[in-house]
Image (cartoon, rainbow, N blue to C red):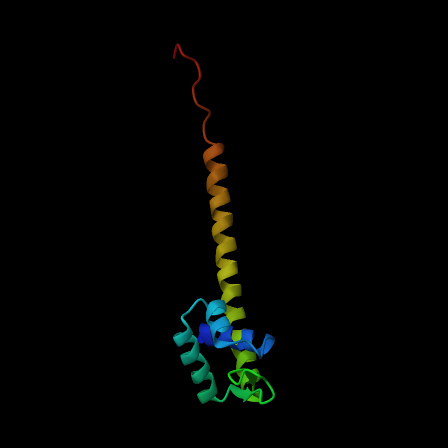
Length: 118
């Protein structure tokens, strides 16, 4: 399971602890089975804990709560992704600047000869 998928799952579950695994799967763009594998991995790592709503009529209702370790891991992963996204952004900015110069150079080239007798 990728670090990015774990990160996205942690973000979603922190914002919506009562999210069902089916809804989590839809939000992650994966199958329900893959979402289940992801949740189990996060539980095994100690990053989330599962709490059953005993008072709920639907006994399948759970809350996925980030543990203190999970909150710290999410913060670390956030810093890691931010660093990479900033580097990607700077590279993209430089590429855009190069393309703009290329377009300007193409338009600033010698004017075409419009004299039909030449």
